Length: 346
Image 1: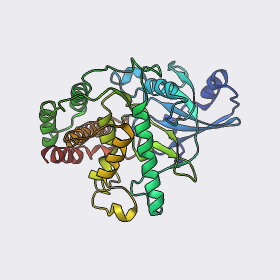
Image 2: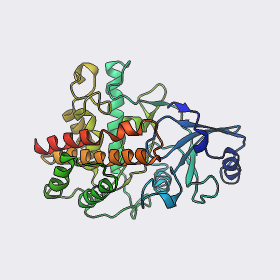
Image 3: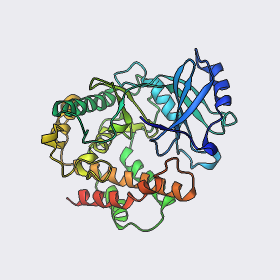
Image 4: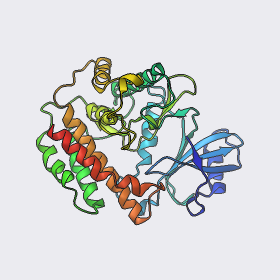
């Protein structure tokens, strides 16, 4: 994953950070040099190079007093990563969380830096057919492994409410969208009206959800088709695993020009499984069936993603976005909402 020199105004105080880490991260030795990861829409993330090795520092974008309640929940990220350590889900090691905003001006945590490949384009350019097939099979394996984790057994039984996941999510993202709204989007209004009336008849067993499981949140081994770390757990919670998996499957429904999608590409020639085969592989690993409710889950995720993009646009307009292209991402909200309504109407 590439890095950039951080803007001076936004750069954490490296000396203050090093002093804090020296007391809390075993074996740490400074001095510390920071560079900002190029990715990341929500929480600024830095590579911290020190004499003792490389670390990753993940921060809230602003002091807690300036943020909406529950936004940028890096404390939850830290908790879930600690809980899953040693499970079948590959993770970076976590070292310490700092809730004291006086240290660098915002809440942050420190984890280990896991080297490897971050594959940001879903069509995986430059790979062989067999290589692409192996990458997708590994992603399928790991999301199925995550959904097989017993939240109670890893100490996350209280990580979120255990009932009414979909109604609560629809209400939450409607509120978030309204807070960030910059103009009427007809498709979003239709989804807001339709989703509560189209809920699946049977609720799925509650699982631990990642919330943003996609290729560029996975670090693969430098040589093998093996995931060595799942990143960005900000949106993790307890809920319906098909909602999580359908989000992961959205690239099959978006064009290459929209979120590096796969729609319109000859996936068979590329060695990438068709969505139905990918869905069947996940269902077989989980021992479940996926039925006629699938398009609801896809439409729901377009609605949710449109809400996220609208929030990015609002932060861009307010001057608090952490990514240089935040406005471009934000303008995708109406496009994704239109896709969601097409899927809902199919």
